[in-house]
Length: 94
Image 1 (cartoon, rainbow, N blue to C red):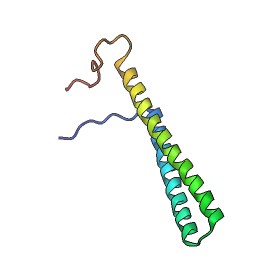
Image 2 (cartoon, rainbow, N blue to C red; image 1 turned 135 degrees about the vertical axis):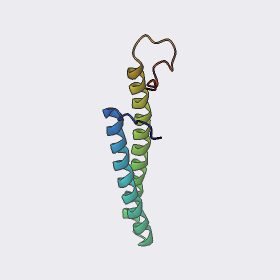
Image 3 (cartoon, helix red, strand yellow; image 1 turned 120 degrees about the vertical axis):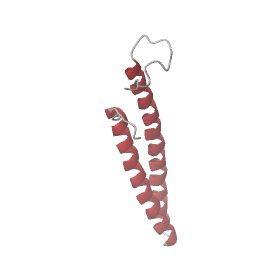
């Protein structure tokens, strides 16, 4: 019995896309750092490790952005003035 899935809000979707882009770039930088390490190129290794560290920071930032925007979207769906935190969080079954 398949569940009806709602579409993700635009903010969450764009944050997810940014996270995947940062993940891909960080993977490329990590491969670059590995090749520079095998070649014993210190300047290239330093540059690659710096970019890899910035990529990891970007991934963490985007993951936090996903969590925060999901919370904001859930609050918008519930609406203002609701007393219980789970009131209106799920659609009633038809």
